[in-house]
Image (cartoon, rainbow, N blue to C red; front, side, top):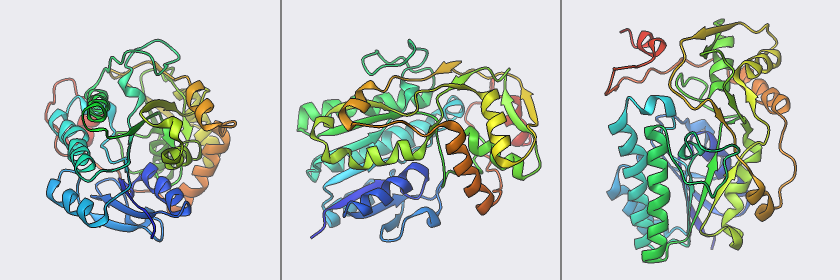
Length: 335
């Protein structure tokens, strides 16, 4: 009988790729997703989709009782770092309390290992490159929630023996990304705007840097982590090594989409200026090769984006704090 695994957010971007790899590894995959940012067509054939929220503790308990999951891969989150300042209650409910519901069930139903995708947002303005031994100092509510879940997993291991693996990915892009999300995933935003005949919008001067990471360099590692004993109860940065400016990224995206770069600079927002991490630890434990270069990964995503076409940009309608909300987001809300 195949072991069952739970993938939260499996109809979303990273989760759908992790689900596919788990199916290829021979697991029975149950996807839990509320479809707020995912799509049913992202769920790979062979996975069982349950449409519900990590906020529904009773449904979660029922799923664990029914399937007796061996492993949990928790990828469901609302990962808009900049927006999280203005949606604190929504952020903590979805990204922290929802995670606690899953941790409770994992302990009660004796899950072998809980795999959690955190974020380099936990580091804040830490030293560069960011290494796993740095003391996190998150700069936004999203990073605070992610770090709180990390700490909860550590104490749950100490108190109840729940094994965990924490990954801190960053700026991941690729096929199945929600290019209609206007608040996160800059490469998807660029491609969607190009297909809509609109300029690519960049906050500030565009010289902020990120190490943009192709999905094929992340999803397989997350999926097979549970069969790597050395990974248990460890934290790993995972992603690309080479950082690029947003301006350079815009040029690359435009080239891969076959257009001239048309960039509109907006007022700067409050964000970490430079963010990239060290990957010596994950490379050593998982014996990784070279990562996919930016131009190659963007070209692959561009081919997919042209195939699926532009998507209507979603507007977040539950802003809790409007003070200092970026003007471009305010305009999208009609305010």
